[in-house]
Image 1 (cartoon, protein in one colour):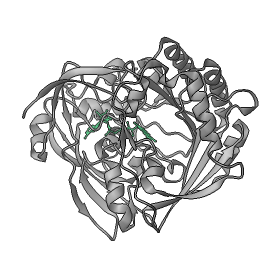
Image 2 (tube, rainbow, N blue to C red; image 1 turned 180 degrees about the vertical axis):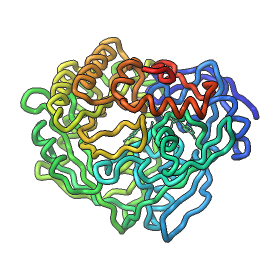
Image 3 (cartoon, helix red, strand yellow; image 1 turned 90 degrees about the vertical axis):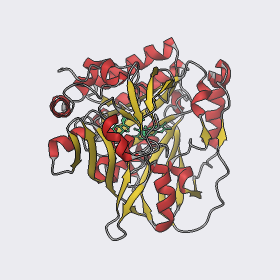
Length: 434
Ligand SMILES: Cc1cc2nc3c(=O)[nH]c(=O)nc-3n(C[C@H](O)[C@H](O)[C@H](O)COP(=O)(O)OP(=O)(O)OC[C@H]3O[C@@H](n4cnc5c(N)ncnc54)[C@H](O)[C@@H]3O)c2cc1C
């Protein structure tokens, strides 16, 4: 296998690594590679989850074949490097969708399993792992198909950060859909209480709130709540994707620009709301149309803060938003969602409650603010999402994930020599007891 020595980074570009990367094309190469180091997908995790600085890592993106699909049960088997967006494109016209889709179609099947990702349908469908029926792991002890019946290992693998072995392929239960377009209803939420009431009152299959994190005073928490259902029909073909060709200068996301953008974005939906028809990709993956949009934050990159807090602690999110709005540091990307209880693994992020995600440019003031938001999350009995984290410390994460010890027991049994350690696992000291 050829190893390429290179610099590579997480999606936020604030954390990067230098090391050797292999990009195998044949699944039989995975056996020897599984003795060299961990795996990565498309590095859509923001921090260092998919980095192995100074070591070796296997890039799974060429192992992207669909192996089988059963039209009667909806069970699909595919190699782990396939992207969820590709699955949606191929299957939606045939009446099937991946059961759960995160906000980017570039996430791979392996990455979706290793982070147990959630989507706009989390309140009804649970996390991605709830729809996985088998994962084939390759590791020091050979190849093993793991199903929900192998419970402790299954739960350590879903949302398990790739620490139980390389996921070579998986079977998932696809979800029926009516076609490859979305009927999307957008409503303005005029303030925080309105926003929460709209999220709580929604009965749609897919629901998400965009929040104007620059709004203060009576407008604090205003935004747009989007509800979606799949449907049959025709919409014009989406325009080709655009690229951000260079690292944007520091002023590109300066506070007045973000404030102005957010104002326009909020007002794009009429006061009385509207229902529109959209191509499926535009609804699920709104940012994917602009390739490398992470370069808009300039060379220093950015961080995303994402937490979830229990239902009863919803007021804490309002307090957070007040801090964020007052800081003048927020970017246009801020999302609020009500989550259900569904989670599939010991280290899976979801809990019943509300999740808030906000992007911040990588500056000292933002790092300090994120530290405060993390402490508020912990005090509220919530947790941080590891797919987004680049700043937390291990003690805080272990306190937020009470099943850490169960995960660790399985990980130690599967990977006694620490082959699959990543920069994140080292930074958070996740392979040590609490
Ligand atoms: C614009 C954007 C929107 C997003 N929206 C959401 C969202 O709505 N919901 C959500 O849950 N997440 C969301 N995410 C996060 C994203 O879904 C996760 O980070 C996901 O894991 C990315 O998949 P990936 O293939 O790029 O994995 P990577 O980031 O490359 O890797 C993630 C982890 O999986 C491990 N891994 C990857 N492949 C394998 C494999 N084959 N075997 C073993 N381990 C493996 C890696 O070691 C790493 O620990 C979003 C990210 C972006 C950039």
